[in-house]
Image (cartoon, rainbow, N blue to C red; front, side, top):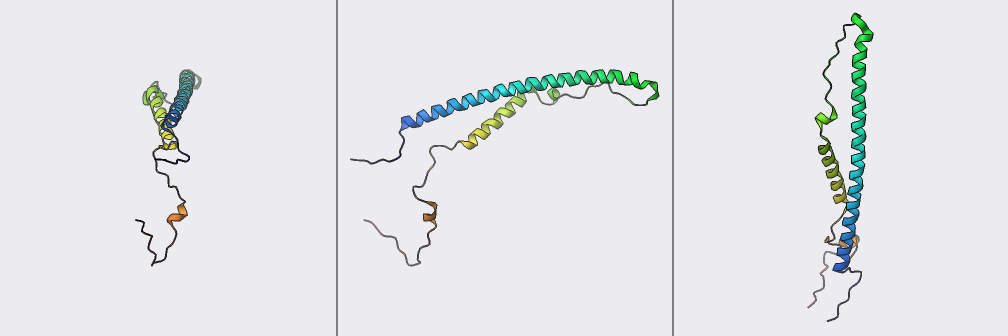
Length: 135
């Protein structure tokens, strides 16, 4: 039995393509993870510097104002981002967002593709038209 195939891909080619795709996604996720780690370290450094600066300002301000001012300064520090959202939670949120975006872009290879054009579906036929019957 002779079979004619055109523009078809073998199973090996599909597997090879999927392996390459997984490798590229893994590399991309590793790169994004490294970027997130860098940003988190930088964020923690900035928060640490800000807290140190705020403590210095809170200590110096009451001395500068003297006893003439009625302004009350609270010694309770404001909640930091680490108390509100942990680093691991932030990393997981970013990873899930990246994965969702990547999954939306990739279309599965098993989707059905019509072999004819869209306009063929919308051709208007006469009311008396009867399709041919092959036996």
